Length: 635
Ligand code: GCU
Image (cartoon, rainbow, N blue to C red; front, side, top):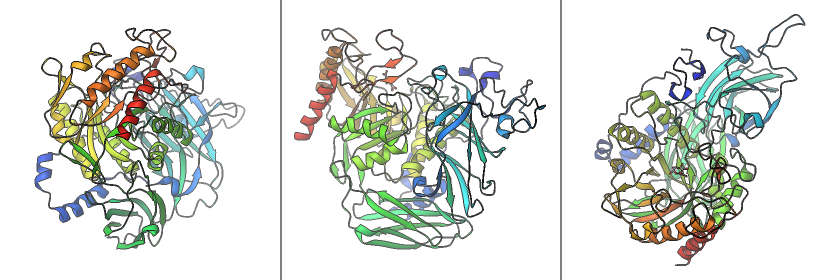
């Protein structure tokens, strides 16, 4: 079967059951115990950092700080549910790439159909297509996008087409030539287009297909709206022939006065002198890249450490002989000690809330700083020092703002519910998304958790899959905590036992429980206790109840604000009694669109577990949680 074809033509018929594409197989290969045995600190750090850099995807770090041009704005679009822009009537790929070929009818006699014409309508990029056109609200399939742009001086240096994200599969063409494809809806990707640009009238065409598949990540069944499109910013990046492709500058693991990290150059001049500058801390550390363009560094530095109370960011410059990149980086240490989570060496309690990348007021996928500032501002006002960004990497604006506003972040890849654990191609997709997530945010002080999964069923293949991801995450970034949102396991009556075999591979246990909503009456929480088979901290990664704003009744009437608030009161009583609980994230900050929630007049295709309505109205439960968090701060 042709590689980039959506399942619509698949013999089996239902897209949910059809595979996406055939990829190289990657068998899960890491055993954590073997990794622990081999640690000998300085050597391990050198090796770990070398491996970390080598394993990072080829993604330009900090694209916003690079020269280039934004390609955001109006893009023409064509819906193509039958893949007619790509396949002929016998399902063979159209030789010249079809719509991607950027052809137009040559003359008045030319009957060529696969073309964008002046009359072709347009969509805003970045943005999902669903909330821009009523006919696209429920649409799942391919949409072709086209944008023209000039690029004078195309000859100088190197150029990359960079995408913040495109949901779900993207095939990219430039000036009629295919430059590459990407799978995964929430992480950045790029293609080098050096030598392919003209000074004027360049045409970039992208086929984006958001069809859901059983062998995708996330799989076909989720509890959020499958917003499709070029959902995040698009940039053309200009860099010198040899440029600083990637770097990590953070506190050395477990230290509070040593900065450590690495730099990787891309280009012919691999061996160069580089300098890591933190002017405000009087640091200017010289290093030299090796034949692979790679340098590792570690040096003492007197820094005021980043925390939610004082989110100090430093101007940091990574300088090479042929390139220079500026960034704003906070320095903090995050570790665990038994059942405690230590931020900068001190125990911290995570007062949190979960957030979907659902835009407040206008609905649709979050893509702007304004959206992010509203959502994170609401969390801050509620007394939070922590946000769980569910269930996929959010826009870079969210983690950058969390750095600035002082919010600790849980970042997660969409290994969600029923994934094909035995399918190596699916593992490869999950690992790729993990690498891209870590690559993008590894310099964000706010990000303290890498989460491998959410609510996945017990099973050996699943645990092997997820433990390999956890090992990979440690390899890519040993400075943060590895976690996952597991499901509670009922033990003795009124006892929840945290004994998921995955716990062995995690630094912090996450658990989603809905006592009082899916699981018994609110009062059940008063009787419930938790047991932890691991000497590790617990973050209650989800709890909550549902009520549309303005729905009122007595507290025993479901779907009312009174019932939701009552669940919160009982929940908070229970949570306070858990001795190893080090944090919580209420589900969820704001109501969000969801095709699985269709109770008429109540849900209307929204999950209504928000503490805020999607129009920013505070429900009674908001005040219950806010008062609890305030009490936590004052004690
Ligand atoms: C689950 C899941 C969420 C979902 C929530 C709910 O636990 O992780 O994605 O939205 O429960 O049922 O509202």
